[in-house]
Amino acid sequence: MTSRSGRRPQPSDRAGSVPTPALWSERADMAESAIISRHLRTLWGFPGTELGVVGWPATNRERAFAGWHYWWQAHLLDVAVDAANRVPTPARRRRIGAIARGIRLRNLTGWTNRYYDDMAWLAIALERAERTQELTSARSGLVALEQKLYSAWEPEVGGGIPWRIKSDFFNAPANGPAGIALLRLGRVERAREMADWLDATLRDPESGLILDGIHLPSGEIERPVFSYCQGVVLGLEAELAVHTDDDERHVDRVRALLAAVEEHMTTRGVINGGGGGDGGLFNGVLARYLAVVALMLPGEDKQVETDRRTAAAIVKASATAAWANRLEFEGEPLFGFDWSKPARLPGGTTGAGKFTAGGSVTASAVPERDLSVQLSGWMLMEAAYQVTAAGL
Image (cartoon, rainbow, N blue to C red; front, side, top):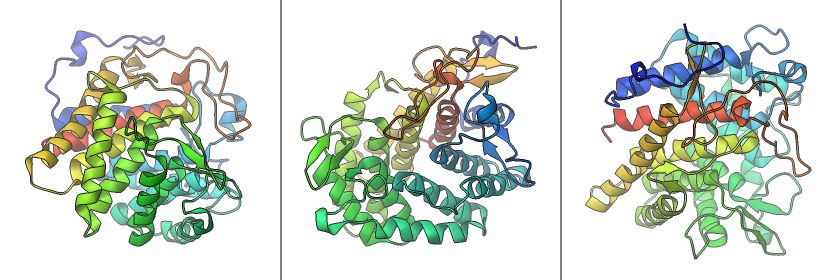
């Protein structure tokens, strides 16, 4: 039996196994199982609901869902859809519906909130759940979210949507996922406008990476570079290349940004760094949309094939590193916040994530306790399965 104190993977853990689709599927199953056992709980005793407790071990406040972090739950729903698409089962389909109902009930005021980035992530997850898993109850949420995201565009300041209602900060984490959601909901022209705005406004001419955001109308740019900003722009441009006539422009943007990501945000093919709190999701988001590039980028020439394989290689290298550096607790994986370093076992609730003045969630003292970090690990395993199953 696995030690309750956690252990490093042993040679018998198939570390040298050929990374086939079946092996990545098995690893994704194990990541899913760990989330279910450690984090998923019924919301306030309501039958047919589930949400992810945001820390493990959890505080009483977290177990009661006093803190729940809307956008983390949106990614929980999205990766639950990944699992159901990979191996459909009645239990997975029920879980998708339960998480969606949990989000709707816990949000209290309906599907929407004040943050456009939050709403965009949920729109992406609900659209996939409706389209691939026939979650008909998603329709009302998608109608409400689409209206909010589409109407948030502000041409009077040059375009873009703000981070939250009545904010002067227009950023990639709102415009990128909103563009993806609106494109999938049929708002192709607005999605193209968002991609053009991101490219013209937030692409750093020196590094080629996407900067965080800009204050409008002052024009002051916030220059931090986050991995998930690159991910959402890669995904948006790749999908626009599929769904518009101007595919060469979007393919060229993907190529340039992918090269910048490979140069500046990976080491030996593994995505750099990581964090906890909200930052725990950043690298998982990048991995998800690198897989989108690998699977969807259109074109038959050698350069496009190289781009697809480059995106897939980053996903697979990152997943291999994350798996090799995991801990196991009671037979289930615990992923590190930095996939290139050994994971640590959280021993308590010290430093449980709190809200900053800016509205973001800070990391726990041991980031591995954060649901966000473990969701990224699961997302990464699903992405590795997707690209290997496609022969990449």
